[in-house]
Length: 506
Image (cartoon, rainbow, N blue to C red; front, side):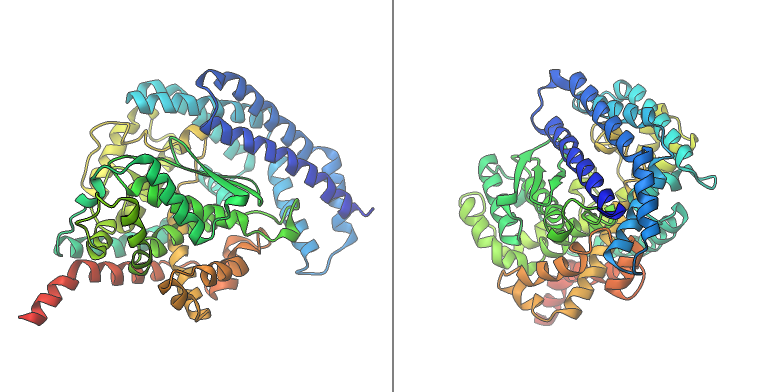
């Protein structure tokens, strides 16, 4: 057996252990009784320690060096695999095993603290936990190394190759294009969303969301959906992908759009090349690309007129009395209403990125230590007022609303806006490349679009860095322009079409 084959066998075994760790994490948020938090935290800490020790020990390093010495044709799967492993290995060996284990344990405990703090609207209860996690994250950044900006090291874990400065530059372009659009929308025809705030039976909602996810292409023979406080998608393997959603009886988009969003993540996970199973090439190239898939399906498809032309009759059949007085046109406008809101995951397409920008700015200050944790609620509310013109009445719908910081995931939030930008860029390229996509969408056939995404986005897995994959697919770097074109075109039509129609009649 060659050194490369021995390396792959070793990494496959570690991958199987990683699947077990992922399953523990999913169960932690979906089914574990609250009393099991400490035991689960200890177990997850032990698993994190074991995985880190096995991956970073001298044998892995020896096999990797020997495999590299064997040589590989440039651009071959072997060469690309070795590049992925080298990057992972060099980064991981910088982190002390005890730090990795401590972080795994503290984030497991932190989740339970966050759940209670959010439920009780008690930021002070969460404060010591957040301070510990920030300290651990700073240690991670310092061990990984940086050029004076700790946030760069944390961001690189989720979006390889991206820097804080690059993110700030592209975010400024998006912001400068969104704020004028919001002003234009304020002058448009008001949108009534009351049809979305009626009572929708929770069980029926779940039935409809699963029906939609299946029609889009999520394979329930290799996946399932459960409930969670904060919706997420967890993949144990390409053939075992778990979606979660949250149901609000008086707010239909919560579960409906949440499920479509997570199904987008799930279809990405299910779309990796089967030939890459149990190898380092199987997986997402970045969290930004992951988010591009969920945002594409949730918004560009799931909030489109063609989508609801297909699905609205079925929604009315599921809720005949609730939606009897609402036609498809009214519902389409309601599901696309633009209005500054408190909750990120329920934000409309136009204001969503503003929620990310304020988190990006706050995270940098927290990591740098220029913002004390105790002052976070006030800073959060100030930025909400600045960006969106509203102030959260409670911390539960303010700085406690997201699960991420309880998981030590600093540097993760920017990928949501990067993915939103990329979703529009990929969709533009898909329509230009494959003429069967648009006719398919009109008749409710999502196979052509999913097939294009499978071939161009999913199957490459981790072969390329996100910047490389963007260039390979789109022929250009990540750009804000497609997103701004899409939003301006769509929302000018929604908010001004009726006014133009009346003018033509007059």
